[in-house]
Image 1 (cartoon, helix red, strand yellow):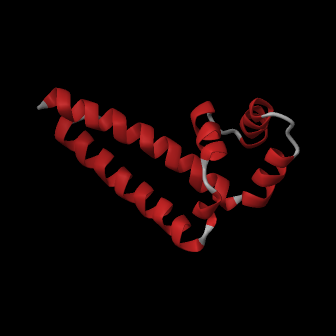
Image 2 (spheres, helix red, strand yellow; image 1 turned 90 degrees about the horizontal axis):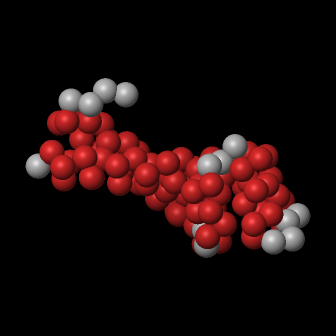
Length: 101
C-alpha cells in the first residue's frame, strides 16, 4: 500500500507542477503568445518560455503542446479545478504517508 501511495503521490505532484505552469501561462497569455510567436523554432520558443517566465522545461513543453481551445473560460476553469483537486490529493496522500513538505 505504501509503494502505491508513493507512486500516486509522485504522479500527482508531477501533474500539479504542469498545471501550475498552465495556470501561470493563462494569467499572462498575451505575453506568452507573443514570446512563442517571436520564436523561429519550437526549441527557441521553449527556451524563451523558460528564460522570460521562469517555467520549467516540463511546463514550457506542456504550454507549447496546449491546444488553443484550452484558452476558453470553461477550459481555464477546468485547469484551475483540476489543479485544486490535485493539490487535495497530494495533501491526502502526504497525510496518509506522514510525509512533510
